[in-house]
Amino acid sequence: MLFAATLAGCSKPAEKVEDIRPVRVIKLASNDIDVNAEFSGEVRARVESRLGFRVGGKIVARKVDVGTLVKHGQVLMQLDPQDLKLSQAQALAGLRAAETNRDLAKAELQRYQELRSKSFVSQAVLDAKESTYKAAQANVDASQAGYRGQSNQAGYAALVSDVDGVVTSVDAEVGQVVTPGTPVVRVAKSGEKEIVIGLPEDKVETLRRVQDVQVRLWADPKKLVAGKIREISPVADPATRTYTVKVSIPDSLAEAKLGMTAVVQFASKTATPQIKVPLTALFYEKSTTSVWVVEGGAVKLVPVSIAGAAGNELVLGSGVKAGQTVVTAGVNLLKPGQKVKILGEDLPVAAGAAK
Image (cartoon, rainbow, N blue to C red; front, side, top):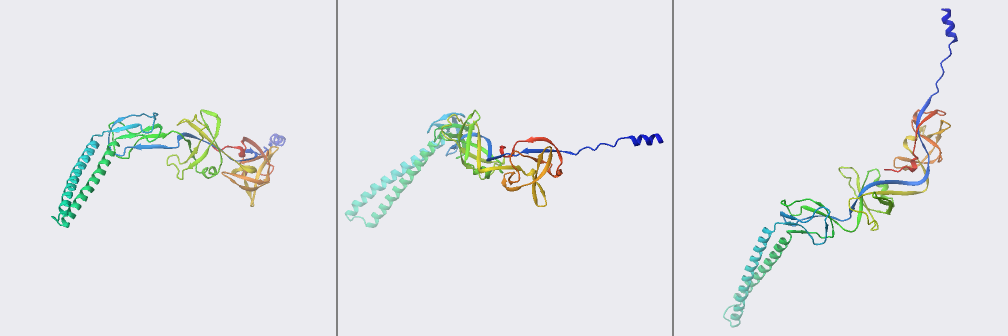
């Protein structure tokens, strides 16, 4: 028992392990970049028409394929014209009959005018013949209009391109019966092109105000040209939940072909340099907003003022300066003078590009 007590008295006390907290940090940067983002999109024609027949019928010929260059007035598809030609012949026969009745009424009116001049018939009889002639002439006019309409219908059996361009889609084949107006061919008009991209809902309002828009092709990433936002869809795409944006590109980007991949860059600057931090860097205590600044492996609490918001980040008005290291994760577990271990240093917030 005495030996055990002696050993216990000689044992060394356990060493106290220093509490070191692992944290993530960023190094503050001050610059005038307010928005710096880029989005991928597709080169499309500004005007793309979905063409369909004005009359219904069975398709008997397809003259083009996807990628075919077409000229104004070129035939794209053909319907079976037999029924339309029969209707045209029927209208022509009706016109000939109306003209015959008109000619007969005109000759009879002339005879009665001569009889009236000799007082052989009354004025009432002559008036009746004039009315018959006018009715016959009106019937001729109606028949002529009907014949012209049927002639047009027969001409509509051929679907022709109304612009110079390229076929981008064929949506019907030979043998298919289509109704009037059903789109069967899509033609992209030659000339102006644009880039179509999709913006997430949290970026739409921010990027709407950006004036500095640059476009580059994936096939030629070194060439940048100025673009211009032409249209922003007011409704999100039901599949992607993004808002479609169309960016016009100049004719100088002649190498842009339909369907090519392109990147649209948005950039804007503030009047004065700003320092931004993520929301997770802020520490709130007794109505005071602060950040933890790392110096010499330990942290200290520095009060800051908030100058505004920039998306998911906050702009700091005072309290810190560029080059300082600020904790971005674990702020609620720290205390002044706390030793910390940096897990990984993130990129400066102000210079990060929103993808």
